[in-house]
Length: 334
Image (cartoon, rainbow, N blue to C red; front, side, top):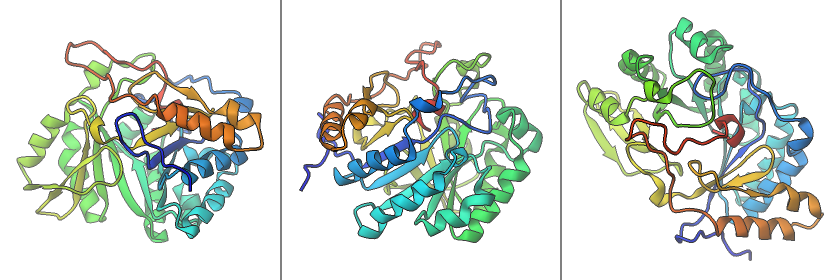
C-alpha cells in the first residue's frame, strides 16, 4: 500500500489537474497574447508519459483527474489517453475523470468522452453575445461552441459553464447568463480574473470585477442559499432558489481559498506547481524519463508535495498587480 500524499499542512492531495498542451484554437485576451510562441514538441510529455505520470498519482491516492490545456482536445491523439485512463475508473481507483474545454471540439468528441467514462465537463464561456465572444477570444466562433454544448448534452455529459468576471465586458450579462444556464440545466461558476502572464495589451486592474460585487447584484434579483457541498475545487456554491440552479464563485483575490487546497497542477512539460499563485515548481519530467521504474518519479512527487506552500500571493488591493505570475495560464493548465 502506497502512503498517501500529505502536504506540510496536513492536506491530502487527491485532485490532479494536468495540462496536456499549451496550444489552443482561441486567443482569449485574459489567457494569452495573440501571437503566442508555443513550446517545441520534444519538450511536451508524450501521451505515454502522461499516462505514466497520471497513473503514478492515482496509485498515490489521487481520486479526481482533470485534463486541461491550452485546449486539451486539440492535442493530436488525445482520445487514446482518455481511453487509457478509463481503466482507473473501471478499477475504482479513480473516482472522476473530467476536463476543462473551450467547447470548440465538443461537437466532434462529446460521444467518445462519455464512452471513456467522462461524465462532467467545464466549458469556458464568458459571453453569449457573438460579437463580444469573437472579440474576447480573438479567434473563437460562438456558433461552434453552441453546437458543442448541444452535442455534450445529447451525449449525456453534465455541463458547468465557467465565466471570468470582466468589468465593463460581461457585467450586463449577469442575469441573462444565469437564466440561460438555468433553462438548459447547466451549473455556472464565476471566476475572478487572475494575474497570469504577460498578455501584451491587457491591464488586469481594468478587467478586475470583484465577485463580492457580482454576488451582491445577483442577490438583488434572486434568493441565494449557501451550499456546503464541495466538488473538489476552490469554488464556493450558492443555490438560486427561484431557478434551483447552482452558482459557484472562485475568488482568489477577494477571498483566499487555500486552507482546504487538495490539488496540484502538472504542466504539459512535466513540471509540478503545487500552488497556482506561486512561482515555485519542481521538475517531474527528468525523473520520469530517467528510468523505466516509477521509483524516481514517486520520490520526486513526494519531494514536491513536501514543498507545497500554505497559500498564494495574488493581491490587487494596492492597485498594482502584486503576485502576478510570469507564466501563462495556458502553460500551467486552467
